[in-house]
Length: 288
Image (cartoon, rainbow, N blue to C red; front, side, top):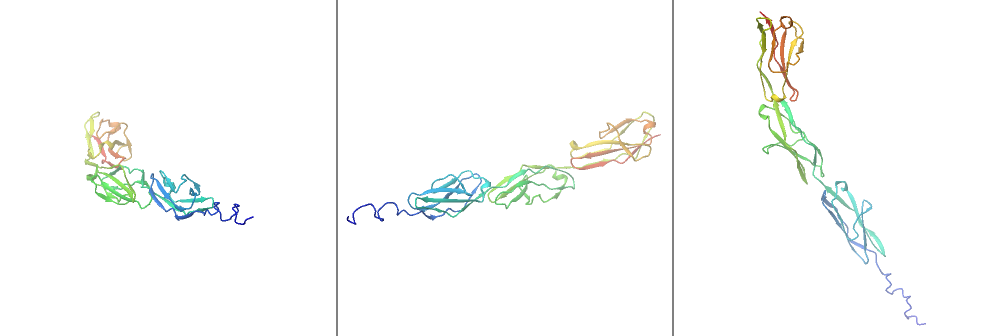
């Protein structure tokens, strides 16, 4: 019964009871990536027989080693908490949390629209965006020659002239990580100039004579113009009613004493798209 004989009961024998729990030397650190890129976290730990388990917001994610790679990260992942648990048969230790920050450029949700206005009207473009992250969004409105005319959204307004007709603009929307450019938009400026008005009276010699009312009208965009002739309901009356089918710049009709004598006529010119209209002075038809 030698007390020093090798019975296997020596508490200091190499049975594995001396295995120490893991020790983390370097915790995962915060990572900032662009949307769609990969984010990589790593941990440094010492010990034998180490096993790793990574979690994102408490949920197990792929990666069973000292590195975690999250591919194609989306903006919804920004602010996620990433932690790693390191364990062996002697114990478990959890890392400090690291935060995932995802950045993305702004996006255009609704393009700016063409502006239709009259000479002297205000021009102000605007664009609807989805802000990026970080959210310090910048705007640069440029004309088609690349000159920046405004850094606001909506764009700083200006008074339209006929010289602005056909000019084109775009906006560049950016933050610190990217930029998006809008489509080009146009300015359309119209006007109505009645440079030759109707006579106050037009005289007719006989029943059935042809009368032609022909004012002089100048417009910038005739494709937007509509014409409507009106006639007073009774003699020397200003209660005008539209004449069916009389929708041209010029109006001709055969004079009828009963229907037309001392009735007033006038032309109304309208451009609903540009928000303008004009009318001639009344013209009275009188038989001699």
